[in-house]
Length: 206
Image (cartoon, rainbow, N blue to C red; front, side, top):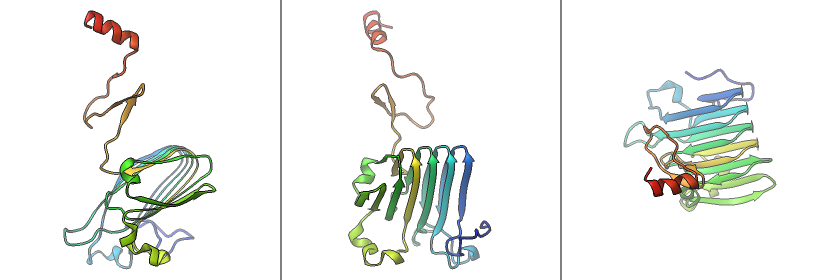
């Protein structure tokens, strides 16, 4: 079931999912599973339209995508994200291929090393970063960017840090400059000790 049409929307751009809040954070895992020919709500819709928007609060979205069957291509994703005052963290599928645009005023952005390795940055000026994730040469995007039928992400933020990575990358937890990796079912304990505690621990074996 799709949400009612907004004034500025058409059937082609109507959101399959809208996550919106005025004062509060958004933290979500979203799975996009493409429809089949029998799904009437998917007829005529070329992309899964997703939107996340908050006025005051951080946003953390982990986006995953699956094809309806091994022989069928997965549904392309069109994602719009906007924050005014808060950090924004996005994880995209490893199979993502398409343009990524970040518009910001007083904010920095960071790509994970794995994402940076497959991302082409076209321009980064006046608060707008335009890039392409994936194999640009074989994508066909450069031939007709206005008619692109693949994935796309548009991020707008006023004041906050933007981080983008793949959805299968391991989150890194840091304590006092050191790096720790843990399993997702572990209970986080105090891992960092002061230098003095570590010294006496070595001397007295505690």
